[in-house]
Amino acid sequence: MRHIRFLLLILLASCTTVGFHKTSVRDTYEYGKMKFIRVCVWKDENVSAERMDYLFDSWNEELVLYNLQAKVAQVKDWKRPGWTGKAIMEELYKAELPDGCDRILALAGVRVSDIAYEFASYILALFFIPTFEVLGAVDSPTGSRGFVLAHTASLGHLLVGGAASTMVHEGYHLLGCGHAFYLSECYGQIRDLKATSEIAGDSFFPVTYPGGGFITSRKQLNYFFLGR
Image (cartoon, rainbow, N blue to C red; front, side, top):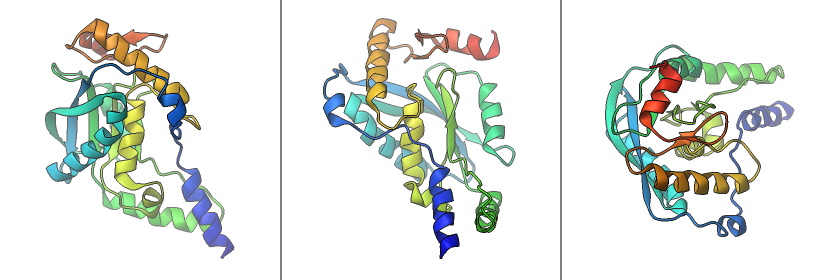
């Protein structure tokens, strides 16, 4: 029984959060008119269009709080590289943001290696060796690209709300929000991001700049990642 309790603690500890809502704080901000974030989706070969729509619907249920909606602008058929999230992020870092898109989001399908990792993590937990399952990630410098595991294929993933919850979580990172216990600071970040988008116009929805402020054009963002 002690081992089972420890296993559950390990699974829960492997999850970080962008924070819990504080409605009283959120309601003090004005988020302006409805804005749209255009997303280029890299859809893994075993992720269906229906699954993609479900995940975006889950994200949009959260975004409506800020008069925001995410739209699938382009879909690229894609094969998940490597065994880990690191390989996915390396590919994303080298990607040019296409015209008509504000963000890139890869929807990674489940693999046999993911299931094998899940079973291995249970065994290691019995020996008090923690493991951490990466369910998604977004680049820290700009919050312009990231990935989500599109299927709920492990107990650990299920315990933290499944793929839909991960989509919402990484969606906050795509708005420049970091990890915190409450979303209080994130509300101000989203307000500032939307205010900047009003100045920048409809050609590009801004991303954060690592030195402070925002990147307000696709050209600037591609130069940041690719140097051209």
